[in-house]
Image 1 (cartoon, helix red, strand yellow):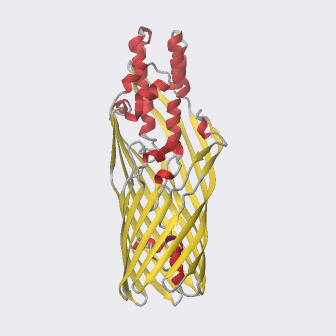
Image 2 (cartoon, rainbow, N blue to C red; image 1 turned 60 degrees about the vertical axis):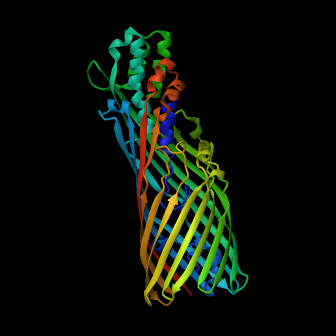
Length: 487
């Protein structure tokens, strides 16, 4: 019955990327990104993240940018599996999680003198939110839904169990997850000549995750009638009445349906080396940046783990690499008051170590295509807009209701206002339209294998060979406001 526990914990370990970017990376580190989207050829203060070699073309002096973003996301999984009907009568259930990051700050600072520019930034470069699942997920409930099937299979083999046929089940579950990767970046840009500059630097990443949750009150109802009863107590009592071969299986059911609880924090850190180059001539600017893979493990700081799953015991380490990233941007000044940029991102997902080896199911990596335009409405105001296509290359075996990636189109627009000669206000709204992803399974959640691993005889476990479907979708919206200051 260990697999019920395994699913319960994985429900808590869900990725929570509430921003634009790859599987673990937030690329929207500034409000300028939110309102124009394509910023990989920037030569302004936000270039510290998007195109650090472009900082060579700032004016001499100090430059600062303070940004705040609020992001809100929903995740919806429609799961279809026939045994769900024993809990409410419907074979399709909708599981909804809500993730929020009410305030996510980022800070940029640069000092330019002659051919040298020294820069630094702090931001939430990965994760950045909290997700709450009040009603659990299909991957767990599908296991619980098989309890009537398992017991009724036993009923068919042992006449003494005939009056214990089960036709209902229920379970209370709750899980809350928080994921943050805090990034502190430092580096230097050197202007080789009037057209070419280079950058070298690094980002220190600190991971802080926290997961709490429980599984309580697993109950079953007998076809003969009566109120729902506690599953663990009932199976324990029945075990004492049965022959020895059947007693062991009922004891397993009794143990697996006890209340479970987890309180686990995860910490870890790693360094990302970063290089870049920028070429600027006349109305054209081209920026290139490469972030190397970040080798990173996270370690469990567990205070409560009554699940029986050892991978989340205190002190256990899990791979959590941040994939390498290549960005290319091209900017062009169409008119003195009108500018456009396009960009391309490639995340080398397959080369990054992930929990349970999930990188094997990521194909050739994530690709993003960006475009944006900015127009000076007057001397003190600009408006801008842009879009981004994010295309994940993940396979069915990567997608689970605990952690899934769906391709998307993102759109942003906003404005910049010059409040004083050296002070600028940026405001923006950014939202994402996600593709739906449907995963069809001949044996939902690999049910026969899971039942056999619980000690259920193969003849009964094969009753779990039932087709099922998960349909994944998301929504996302981000608001941002920032101030740029130079002197």
